[in-house]
Length: 429
Ligand SMILES: [Mn+2]
Image (cartoon, rainbow, N blue to C red):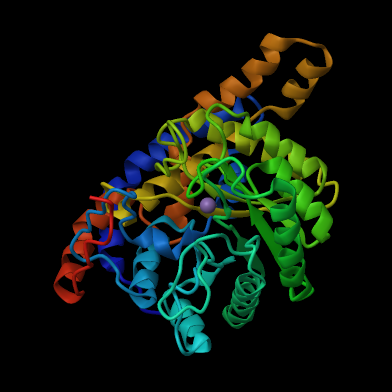
């Protein structure tokens, strides 16, 4: 395996940070021991946690107004894999990449899988794309894909999703994530009921092509690119569709795809209650689907989501196996740095949720002791779990200080010499 960052550099920097880390870890360990928590057991749980990174997240996202590429950005799936390998090598929490088609199309998927493995990576959920047209495409998605009025357009969208399943099988994936941009911009533009009927009919054809061990993850989105209505607009539409399709269809919660201030943690609990919680796309938002870095605006919400996930894991009902992925747009940062930072924040919220005193929480709930129930969550949220994460990372071969190691490696600067420049892309300016 040839990893992109010098192992000597990581070892040298870790040696410089080790004494301080051991000191902080021991202090936190003593603090947790006073409440009966074994820090090493929490560290083991953190070591078992992982979140996938999206292949498209390796590049600068941009907005519909403009994109500002940086030198050394990846221009194809091979370069994206290399960047994802940097994130995994340093963080040790992102071992899988979620590919997107047709953006990541190659002629030989066996070779692509081997290439990823040689970088220490595997593949996560496969994402289809019927929200934009491709060169030479027979039918436009301008008026929808799975829900389009035109039967040939719907068939094209179904065929593309089935092709994604076939590619995913070669890559070792077991999930197909389906998000459609279908919707309307004007009242009256489409019939709400009939467009959903068409979507369900197409989705059922895709569902029928799923291998036995696969899941179909339905991603809802309240708005954009359609601004008046979308066909799978919210978790209600999503769960109804998933229930109609069958047990292999689950709901995927993208944190940014809700109305502002919606109680997402409650949605998580609801979806789990009915066996339909399939996975997450982590990001953050301030106004809408801003695709800001995970936990950068509201880390408390992220913690509360993980709190519900732990409750769900303790009460598995129809099983508990959600897929975790980062899905955010890096407009003003180096995407590798953003994903290193986000992966750490996501793992921190996971770790903090592990530290909630469940007996105290449940006891306070039973006793209607509102303040103590809240304090059970608050005590865990207020703990600084950074030493647990850093130690787990170091023991797995990663860097104690991921951003420091990344900057010292001068990786982006080296890639700027090797890679061709990314185009400015189309914005409306
Ligand atoms: Mn998403």
